[in-house]
Length: 173
Image (cartoon, rainbow, N blue to C red; front, side, top):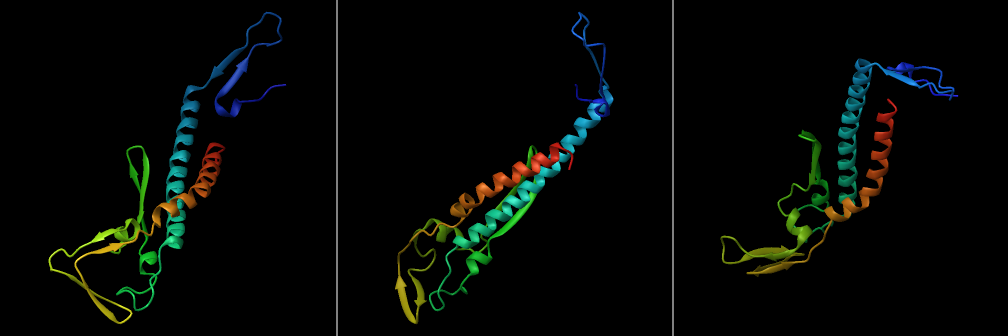
């Protein structure tokens, strides 16, 4: 019992009965190249889908970790940071695709990483929290990571989705 590869440009001849004869395999090179090109095209399309869907999974998870301000404690509306997390891409690069995921609000990186806040051009910073005005020359912002936890949360789903997409591309779907 054998497997027919005739439709893929691969055929065989000879008896193959174990009686001293050799099996001869013939390959239609043109059809094989066309088949490989079709596979490469499907893998290329699957890669773009994987990057696109993966980036949006990271975006969604990161938004769930983004801190939400309290009215009166910020000049930004609660949820602005989460809403500002966007996806750019996927964009084709030399070896595949890339997408960028991150916040667009100016304070996004500072909020995620924390650290010192100092005035850039004025002698002090002036801000109001719950109706009380403060004047400070230094403030230490506590880090509240949201992008890395979002990525870490999304990775298992991305791996499963990528395996499915590549598998479908290999079998021709």
